[in-house]
Amino acid sequence: MISLEQVTVQRQGVIALDQFTYTIHHGQSVAVIGPTGAGKTTLLEAIAALLPIQSGRISFGDSSSATDSPPTQQIFGFVPDGITTWPMIRADECLELFATSSGLHGKQIDEAVNRTLEEVSLSNLRGHRIDTLSSGQSKRLLIARALLCEPHILLLDNPYTGLDPIGCRIIDRLTTNAQLTGRIILAAFNDANVPDNFTDLLVLNDGQKVTAGRFQPELFTDVKEWRIRLKCPTSAAQAAKTIGHLTHSSTVVNDDFFTCCLPTNRGPIEEAIAVLVKAGCPLESCTYDPPWPAQVLNSLIQS
Image (tube, rainbow, N blue to C red; front, top):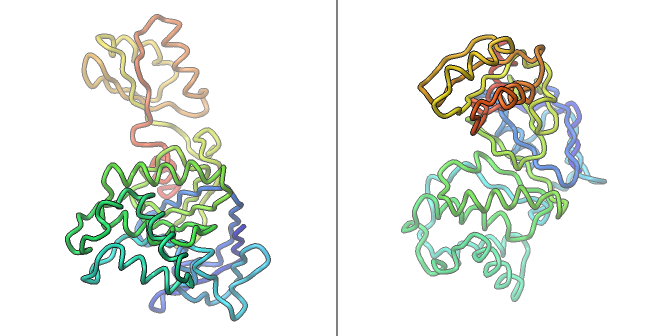
């Protein structure tokens, strides 16, 4: 468990996290969203003891960052947004160096390097120099570095940025498996385009928690309306008219698609879908447009 109590952090003399309180339990994967400067990266770095806290307390089970002993790399794995300059060494040599600095020895190092290279599908490139890897492969190497000591807590800064499809599937697998393994995952997102394999959503602004909850849109009751995009082949105009009594506004994009705003006080999205199905409209898909976490962010920040 991670418990933050009234935590304040400054960056270059400016308060970046302001009396922040939040608790994360084992098995939770939390997506953190917010505008630029909201404190997302600061939160990750404070938990990882990469930034000092000015006041408050960060506890990890029975231990606390208020003591003189910072969290160990066996507990944490941190994947930064990126690294501007890589050392001119091989991929496996890089992991060996970090494994050694993390306290592994001898056979442990070989096993950790082999395991993590396999986990991120880079075994075939272990002998390649890092500066010859693609950006997606380099980001996967960062993931491998974070997994060397099989950490209980994984901190990800913009995890999908710069990743190739293989890397995206790796992050998806890690977040999905967190509930089974008990690992805690905390991931910061700049674009609020969060996949649905996370268990929780945390919204920050100006270093403070705006709202938080399970990763289910219907639980964010402060949102007044949802914007959705529906596909009804050859029948978009008729479908828009069919649910007109439930919508705030609608726009027919073409014969197949229309978008609409559904006020939350007129019932859930499922009700609109049921009306369309009952009317015989050929509904093929219904999606949040933009993704619902982005709508939560826009609604709360603007208000």
